[in-house]
Image 1 (cartoon, rainbow, N blue to C red):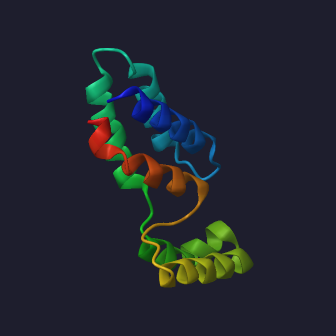
Image 2 (image 1 turned 90 degrees about the vertical axis):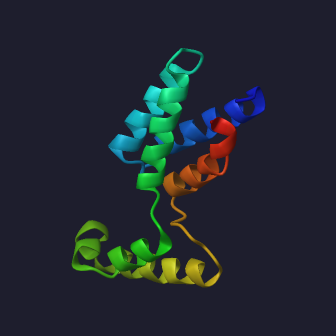
Length: 118
């Protein structure tokens, strides 16, 4: 991976780790990847990191279903669940494929560089 891509992915990785919506698994995979930069484990950790990111990014239809569920109401609260649902439907109508929370946004930005990372 060239230095420009590496710098970009490191920056986006820090954004991901600082996002309140970042899962503990993604945060750990991110840290493991950061720790492996420049080592013999970099490629293996890059593959693990990408796999975790691909598993964690929330497809827009998944967000819509979750926000419209009993569990979504429990997690977000009734009013916020309605707001999340309306927002998700709006961004889907505008072409969004994924949730646009800070964590998912950072993940999408990182995954856009997937081929260059490998």
